Length: 308
Image 1: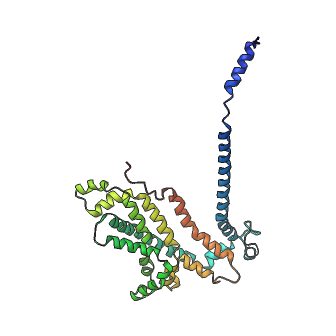
Image 2: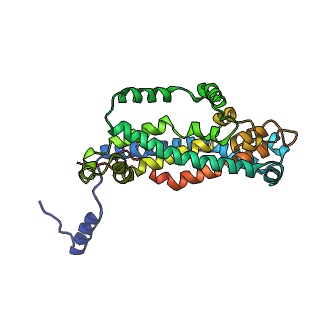
Image 3: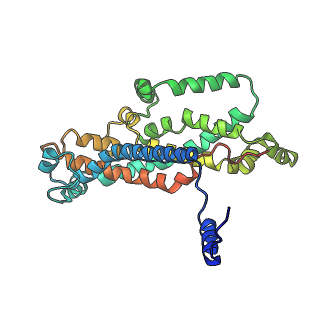
């Protein structure tokens, strides 16, 4: 049996081709990769679909605020107005006390947010670190309050405000909101994730409880503070029920109660969809801005504690 020798240049070319061609993966691995890609494509398709379903009403609101009243009534789901107009925004600023509503809302929101972040942090630290009789009962009561719907507390809140002479005043709108059970719970859980050992050095140096809280523990709780700040700002800015039962004077209207009055048709006849949606869009801007600024700093419960 004889063998045929290949020319050197053909042999070299064949070897180079073999070196350049990577080995093909087994058929089982290829099928796994195909299933992985199909699953990823389906997952992204579902996410995109849900995102469109979630965002579409907001897009309709933005679009309808630039429509005429007739166009918004006849084509409510259209994203392209037949006639672009800013008449709703002009009427909103010229025909309603919107600046006064916004000023009242900003004043109340700033005070409530600042007080809630500070007081909720103090209460959370006390429940997390201080050993006192009845601490478990207090925490259980806190959880029970979180389980009660806010609408159930509206009438008792109204009666208490009337009894203490706080009805129809800024104090009556602010004081019931400066402490929040949910915020206390968030801060307590985060403080418990911080080891007690980080406070020992301050205690050895003679620092008291409040100084240890203010200078050592609180700076480490920045993620929880940012989360509480966002929730407090959003909650107080969008608060409606508490302001309905705590005031009657139109001069104390906030954006929520003032915009609600627009739905009764105070500024004209017709549906007034563009006017109402324009007011809602303007009200959304501050909350959305705060959220996008601080979204990367929202609480990570493992941050701030010692690892190991």
